[in-house]
Image 1 (cartoon, rainbow, N blue to C red):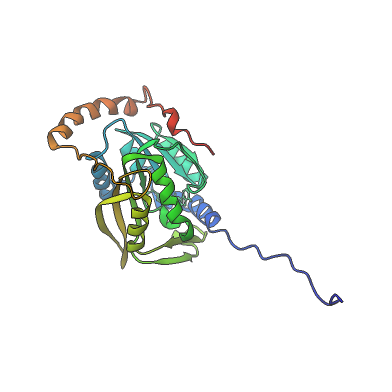
Image 2 (image 1 turned 60 degrees about the horizontal axis):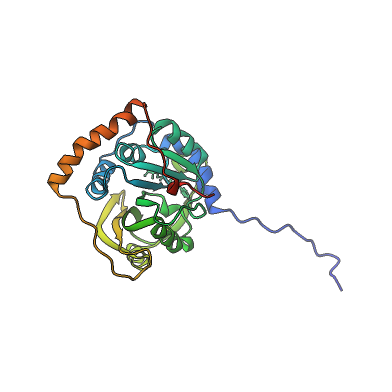
Length: 266
Ligand SMILES: C[S@@+](CC[C@H](N)C(=O)[O-])C[C@H]1O[C@@H](n2cnc3c(N)ncnc32)[C@H](O)[C@@H]1O
């Protein structure tokens, strides 16, 4: 017989970490990054890509934030598509980096055609994706890259998942989730990547791991040809072309158009 004293309570709605991240960046977008902030690390990391990816190539920035500084730097030479879960970040990115295209969405749900990009960058963003989804996210990135394409990402150095209330004084709770660096090395290998640059990026008492890797094959485990690093002389030649490419983006006379392969299917 049913207990007459039993009270049926509605199920407790667990906090969705992605919703925390979205709300958190909506709240702190401008506190996190000003419209014209520069950062020498980003300039240095952009150079690592410039030495490897031919001008005019297609670059996807996952968790692009407000587009400053990385998408802005990249858009001088490349066709850039940025994706971010925070509508406020995407709104600012569209205003601050008119030469690039931006999509508001969850990187774990958005989709692109196979082999659509020459490079994918994701700085300080994968660490906000729930850990259980990260290995699959790396495999998705591999599918979006052409073989020989590059991934530049900051990932965890030590494993930690947690939240911080009132992050940066914005009133919202922020969520992070990351594994240790060795786990990322393993997951990258399993997804078909070969690591080329592996650096510690200090922050406070801890830090992050910067990994730059190339895709040996869309199908993990298959040998491929190592992409050629551009020689210094080649680089010097393309700098002139780069400046020519940069002009329309700066003057706003014309914008690089996203190729059809870059269209997101949401
Ligand atoms: C720390 S900020 C970094 C922004 C930019 N990459 C940079 O380095 O300046 C992390 C960004 O990742 C975005 N992000 C976090 N989880 C995401 C997800 N699942 N899909 C898309 N964007 C996400 C956040 O909204 C935020 O703008």
